[in-house]
Length: 333
Ligand code: SAM
Ligand code: SF4
Image 1 (cartoon, rainbow, N blue to C red):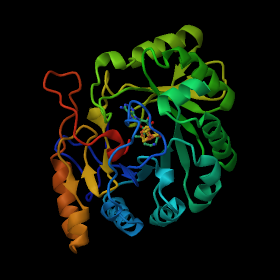
Image 2 (image 1 turned 135 degrees about the horizontal axis):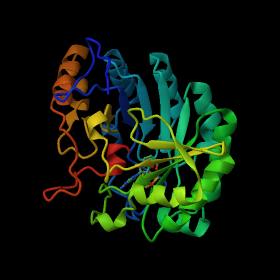
Image 3 (image 1 turned 90 degrees about the vertical axis):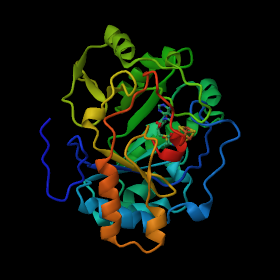
Image 4 (image 1 turned 45 degrees about the horizontal axis):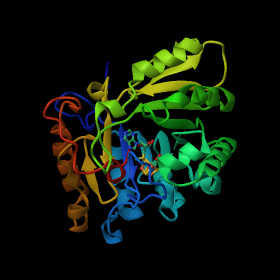
């Protein structure tokens, strides 16, 4: 892929250029998805260690200055952070081409209008079952109706396109794949099926807990004619319905067909660590230097060095693979 690189861009040793920043605003969450968190939750990051909105905005502006054009807010559950719309307003002023959020949707009906007015462009909503009893089994909370209502409100206020994230797990929700496809066609959303990755707090991931993207596609193509859309740097392979129906589907084969070669992403955790990869074993503390008075140039020098040292890719499935100590909800998915 041709990459247009400008002088100040953040470029790693393999020539990948950073364009996308995931900002986790909290590690806390109101759900307890079984593949992500134990029922009792986790030991939360103490609030004094969590970046303030001012600190997040300062770093976001720094990243904007070195070529980051898209920001996604995530968590934990971003909507459990109080006054999130204030942060969205700050980020809007910095001026990103794309400003989005990944949410479990439980607080979306209440917040969608405020977020849209503050400058959020779009949302991805995570939902792994359309059956209330199963949604409750997976998330250990009974909130499906609230989430579906949140999706509707998000569409109504124009947080579009609304995308749905669905982690497919064999024996848990794989029998709902076609129901999700119908949901996409009826609602006009894009449903993206995601392979389950080894990032849960309870460890114990094995390949059998992952439903491969090729099998998902085979199932869908058995029923519907799909037209593949041109691939961007985004990790999903995306498809429209050949019959012209609204909506669409995507598959994210993070495990079976990693997209590390075109990865243009960085992550900032709620406690101010920058991570170059979900699966990295190292990370750069930015909160410490920032609170000790580091200048923008000093912070950028640290950031450049960490980006330069980004590894080639993850090695899920390889003999020596080790799950990172930081779990998904503390990194920001
Ligand atoms: N709480 C928000 C949510 O659920 O959308 C945002 C954070 S969550 C960590 C972001 C995304 O990561 C969700 O779509 C979730 O389903 C996904 N996720 C969490 N753990 C995962 C895992 N082990 N493998 C694949 N996806 C995972
Ligand atoms: Fe919360 Fe999202 Fe993890 Fe589910 S996947 S427990 S909603 S952070």
